[in-house]
Structure formats: structure tokens, C-alpha cells
Image (cartoon, rainbow, N blue to C red; front, side, top):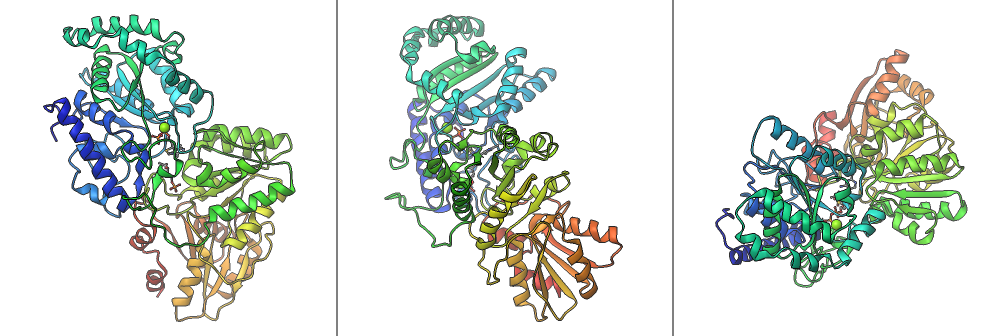
Length: 600
Ligand SMILES: Cc1ncc(C[n+]2csc(CCOP(=O)(O)OP(=O)(O)O)c2C)c(N)n1
Ligand SMILES: CC(=O)[C@@H](O)[C@H](O)COP(=O)(O)O
Ligand SMILES: [Mg+2]
């Protein structure tokens, strides 16, 4: 699509067409709706001013990249967004060369731009990285690590700060307050008065002259702007839905030939009135009726997240040293419920996984019992903190790991595949998992009694109901759910137990089923006993094979010199793509009907 030759009127029409396409497709497929609608004009302006063929276009998180996809040859294919083998909901270079980098986790964009800018300089090329980052993503530490260097080396980078005064939930912290204060101020008017559009437009493309003029004006308008103090020029706030103004400002920023932040005020959900504004539930949506905004609800059982939240409410009611934290995912992790009931003991700390872990380590040292409620994929951000601040001191912090296993349409950046592998080899760490709702309640109760760091994992959505009566957790104890007459043993961990049960039901033999419960420490005694009776073992767990549950058991068998045929039905050594969870599991050969054949 050639944007360069279009005039303002045509570009505004294009914005309407883009919005219509997004509303239509997302209402059917689901997706990141309000973020992407709010970024339409900013994205069109980026494409007008910069050259996507050569300038790195870097989208933070990249959940707002739908307009960019539509502008870069994916208008028709957009129909398939977030569906299996269809377009990804995030930027993905394998999908298009217009996508500079994979993203999905927040606040990496400015570091990428700094790296790209250094490379461009060394290669003596004339390109300029352009970043789009949201106000929520500006709360993470990585951003300030990158700005700290950028303000010093002063390489040309244009950062568009897309400020809708929302993260997924309300943005948290002093940076957010600071940005809001700027938006609320009168800078915008003064800025418009000082920089006369007509004068600037008539100037020759002399970067230094324009830059000087901007600088002079900005000094008058924005004393003490934090970014200026860090050595990065600041322009704004501008109206992020006024195409003419955005294009003009980006032209200026580009000509300045140094690091510049363009602060744009936008409205999340812009163009779909029902979603416009600060409505958290329009951030990521399932299919909905676009005429009235009603969600097409599937009747489903209570989610593991909701079961967890209720269990934690009970615990926090009983024990007043129970505290907890989320890193910007209050509703996603269910902790919003606790923040309401116990506002002085549960916190959203913004997109700050590292800080969440370390601050809770200190609370544990002070005698509190912290629950870090977090998605498996985002806990990766706080890894050194788990080792250095929690495990080394063996502090009784509980990691309540949500979204373990395949998460569905978000795909490879978000799959909860690796937590067992990256936590299992940490000294002092205890790992256990519930198989269903009832055992999740028991697991939360049990976690309170442990005087060590531990991690409990549970899946996105609801558990498959099981009929086994639940027994209390005991340190390092597995639970044999049934004996069998064949020489096979199915070993399930967490949600893997129900897959083991379903596979057993489809199999003609009568097979024993073990709920492992603890992958660290293993129930070595029971495993030894079972090895005398069964010698074909099959592992069912929603986790990476390398370092996962099968690995743990193989290490044990090897140490004990026990000879068992072991097959692990965990994830193979590749990243797992997006799509409906069941469809993805089918493609991996992990549905019970397919596993039965493999076993045969
Ligand atoms: C490291 C990390 N933690 C949490 C998330 C979950 N997450 C995705 S988008 C988002 C909010 C981002 O807010 P903002 O940057 O303002 O974008 P907006 O949706 O408002 O456009 C969060 C918390 C993530 N993607 N990465
Ligand atoms: C972009 C992002 O990281 C979040 O919006 C994420 O997609 C939420 O996932 P859930 O839908 O599982 O809460
Ligand atoms: Mg935002």
C-alpha cells in the first residue's frame, strides 16, 4: 500500500478503513482490540514519515500492531489473525519483513532501537529506528536502562509515546502520575502557539535550524521534563488522533537527528464508542457482536484463576501475614479481588516483574507470607531475582504461576512452557501442582505451611474435572490414583493428570495412574516401588521436555540405576505457535486420542 503519495484527506479515509477492518475481524476472531484501535493514526503517520523498507519500525509488546499489519501487505490475510497457521497477533519477522522484531513481552522496544541505532551508525547507513511504546510499558525498568544509555550516546531514535493513560488496568506508579500530569497541563496549547505550523512547513529541510527552533520552544514549555533531564528531547503532548499534527511532529522529530520522544495523547478503543476510554475488558477480547458490543460468551466452568483467587481470599482472611503482588495483571491473575478486599496487603506494582519478586523477598524476610501471582511467561523477566533474592536466602515466597502450558492465541511469546525447566534446578525451590479445582484449593492451603520458596502452576481457563477424591498435600508425596493390570504407568503432573486419565480411558489396557504432585522433590520411595511393578512409564505434563518432568524422573532413574522405558509427552525443542489451545495441542500430537495411538 503506497501511503507516501496519499494526501491528508486520503490518509484520513485510510484510517477509517483500517478501523472498520479491525472492528470487523476482531469481533469474529478476538484479539487486542482497544490498544490497536487507539494506535491507528500514529501508525499511519509513522508509515507516511518513515520508510518501513529500511527504517526499523519497533512496536513495544506489539499488541497494537494490527494497523501496521494492514498497511504492509496483510489486508486480506488479516482475516486469519490469531488463528492457527494464520497471522500472529504480534509482530513477527517470519511473517513479514516489515516486522522488525518479535515482541509480546513489554518494554524491550527502546533497547532494540538503541542496538539498531548503534548498528546503523557502524554500518554508516542513513536509517532511523522509530519506536511505538505505550504509557503502561513505560513503567518497566528496561525502558530506563535503555533511555539511560540513549540520552548519553545521543544516536537518532524517534520514540512515539502512545499515552492512553491505561496499561491493561489503571497504570500504576509515579511515572504514570507524571505522564498524566503532563497530559493534563496546558503544554499542548502553548506548544501549538510557539511552533507555528506554517512557518515550520515553509522552512527548508534544514535539520539543525528546525531542531534549534524546537529546542528553544520546548525549553519554554516543558521545564523539568524528565526525559530532557536524561538527555532526550521531548515534544508534546500532541493529539494522537490528529493525523496532520502527528505527521508534522514526526517530520520534525526525524529531522532533529537525535533521540526524541514524541508524547501523543490517545484514546484506547478510539473509533468504537462502546470501547472508548478506560475500559479494561476491551484490552484483549474474545469474539463479540460488533453492533451492540456484547461478548459471545461460551458457557465454561470456573477458571483456575478464579479458583486460585477464592482460595487466596480464604487464606488471607485466616492469616493476616498473607500479602501478594501482581506485575500489571490484576484481573488476569485474579488478584484484583484481593486488592479490593485487602487493599493494604495486595499490590499491583506495574510492569515490574523483577521488582515484584525482590520486594516480596524482603517482605518474606520481615515475616510476611508473599504470593507472587504471575503468568509463567512473565516470570521469566524476574529470573535472576528468583535465584539471587529468593532462593539463595531460602525465603518462603510462593510463586502462583498462572497460564502454565499452552495459552492459545497469543502464541509463542506467551506459552507457559518453561517454568518447570527454569525453576527445577534452583536449590531450595519446591515445585508442586494441582490436578483440578479441589487440589488447587489444597495446594494453596499447603503452600502457606512451607518454610521455603515454592511454585504452584495451573493452566489458562478451567481444569478438566476429575472424580478422584482429593487428599491434602504432603511434602514430596505423590498420589497413586489407580493401580493397573498392564505393565504401563501413566505419570501426570498438574493439568497433565487429566490428560493421563483421558488417555487411559481410551486405551484398551488397564493402566496405573500416578499424580506426581511434586516434581521437586520427587517421591522417590513411591517411584522405586512402582518401578518394581510397572516398567513402561509415560509422562503427561504441559511443559518443556528438556528439563521438565520427564527429565526429573530420568535423572532419578539414572541415579538409582533403575531400568525403565520412559516416554515423555511434553513439549519438544521448538517454540509453539499460536492458535486455539486444542488445535495447537492436536498439532503437537498431545490430544488423548493421538496419544493412545502413539502408546500402541
Ligand atoms: C513483561 C510483560 N509483563 C506484562 C505484560 C502484559 N501486558 C501486555 S500489554 C500490557 C499493558 C501495556 O500498556 P501500554 O503499554 O500502555 O499499552 P496499551 O495497551 O495501553 O496501548 C501488559 C501489562 C507483557 N506483555 N509483558
Ligand atoms: C499482550 C499481553 O501480554 C496480554 O494482553 C495478554 O495477551 C493477556 O493474556 P490473557 O488473555 O491470557 O490474560
Ligand atoms: Mg496505555
